[in-house]
Image (cartoon, rainbow, N blue to C red; front, top):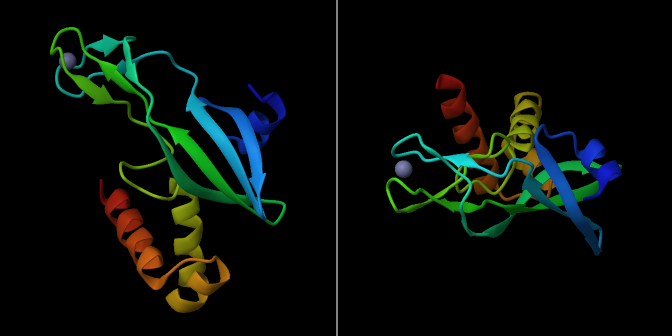
Length: 142
Ligand SMILES: [Zn+2]
């Protein structure tokens, strides 16, 4: 665990396990602190780790450096259903390539500028910006 980086990251329940720097990007390896997750089918909690699944997601910059999270969305196996399932992570939606707070920040920027410029400033394509706007507006309707 990296206590200082975990505190700096400031995502509740999430720990920074490791970090590397590639070019101007800070890559933080993160994982949920909890050792169990709730099965979406039956609601039973499981602490039986099935496998680790890593993927990358963009997060808010730290001191002007782009931050990429290497997220472990673990798979657990439910004893009752006898099937594996992926844990839910509060800070990022399923199959999203950016954290929720990153997407919210982008949407705020678009409100004061335009999609294309916001994309350019944040090193994102128009499609990526658009997909975040859609994601956040749908999320706010939930
Ligand atoms: Zn189950």
